Image (cartoon, rainbow, N blue to C red; front, top):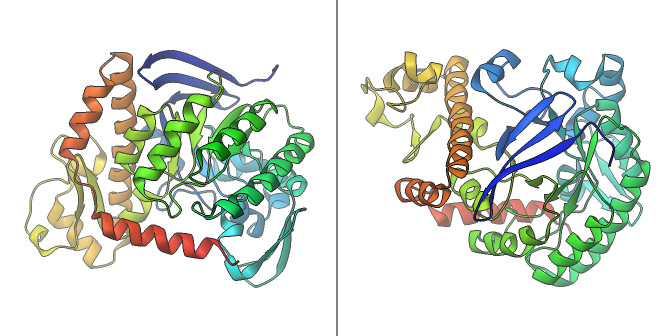
Length: 388
């Protein structure tokens, strides 16, 4: 495949992989975490912040940018990199997840999906060919095929959705023409091992630049997600990057790297910052709590980020309680730094052959949010995905 994209596998430690993915806008050391910049920005942060934090790749959202400001306008203004003044790699999703989560606002057929904008109710149509045209106009380094993200536990529906996803993958591959943009296929199949393996086999013969695992963290349990990765990852082509879509809690990243995943994205670090929460090696802390009102310590004692070098928990709590945007920005800086630093530690551990010990030690210290709460959140996400 003669392209400007190149995947280098440097080392393995069990199934964990240390690698680099070369793109026209720079190299991505992997395993890597991509902060989500839905509307061509990571909320409260600027490109210079992201560079200082060591971010190597961003994710932008095709659905939202198509609706506002529009892909044609972005193209006229020089493409997404020029538009948002970010000179590093960018990945755009296909918009499929957002469209399918609209539930009562969309109608699905074998050719594509018709949906109403969540902004003004206007009617739009996504087909594989149109989604390719939109992503080519946006000009990201990595584009995703249009797929259907079904409820993961319904066997009969997953069989039908998988057939549609595969047909759409063929059409996306045929329609995609930019040689300076990689195209990734998306493996679907719910929690069903045979469907996942069928999907891998079908997509592999289409020879995509990379392969994503989609349709997880949308209603299944963590155990089911990990079991699905156990089946799927070993079957994926070993010479291409592997991307787990929309998954990015620290514990899930460690478990997925353990199973061979290279790339992650998630709104977690920015979203919880806007709710007054911060990531630490022992779990999340919620700075709205009164216990922090006179706490002079930083969020994390050994953290090198600007927020922790400069401000106390007490001050950050004051900003959050007062609804000052500076507080949300400072917490976002810390949380994105935490995720980038975690990925650096993961890469170092793989390089030194000690990833198993690093994973075990981190998970022993890290307190995972209450599982019942997490399961209910996933149930609600699942409910919004389907309007059958």
